[in-house]
Length: 331
Image (tube, rainbow, N blue to C red; front, side, top):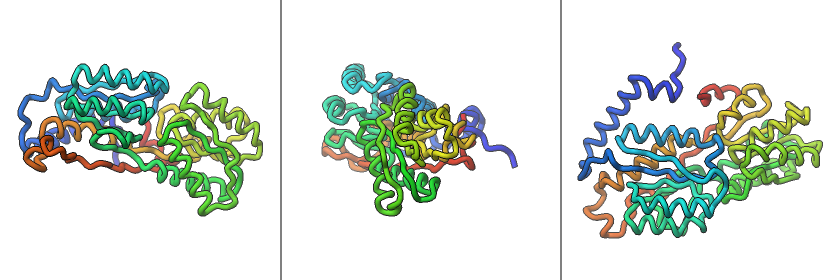
């Protein structure tokens, strides 16, 4: 049996061209847009853009642009600067792109800018984290609480259903939901698991190892660590390795950052809960394109009628990744 193509090799292959042609033909069968769309720009505004988590979002953004024949741009503050993200959104709105995808660092800070964009005729959809009081059209991503439950179940299995554990993340609503999911599973099904610490790793790859090392030092008999953001896995792995407790402390991570996957391969990390980030972004760009170009003929004039013709929420789900399937996620 031949080895499956990686996503990058697939996009370079003739098969990718065939898929692109098929999607183009399907779109062509729908009512045609009123103008050439090759000059349209679709912008993805993220936050903490220095971290490797965004690899799948960036790849899907690029690929969707190729399939649709439009321009795409990835941008956002390099750190967790919510005020900076809000200012950058206003700058993006001023140049009037065809559509904007946003991962909001803080719902309250970004909501006014989202509303200004929509009022200016620029469709906005969100990924991962919601701004429910905004005028955004749709939110695509995981159910954070349910993702946390998946991670909690994985960690419980790894430590045999008993022992002291640490949960790590940072102060973002969707991350907090995941942490609550972990605790809910333990409370409901595993009374012999005790959460002895909640670590704020700041989603900072430079700081996270120190944060988890401190938690291990304070709780030397800890049996497991559950990480709920993209930098928690490697941070915990480095801390466990430096403490000489690889295999003794089980780790369940979040996401599929390239620099974390080797720790799953060598067994330092038991497994990880991976968002379907590529699918999420690929769909988000298509939703914006369909809105901008009136591809979806739900009613004669959805704008005039004040209707939102997109699904308000698209739950994309997660993968459970372990040593058995981690090779599929390497680039």
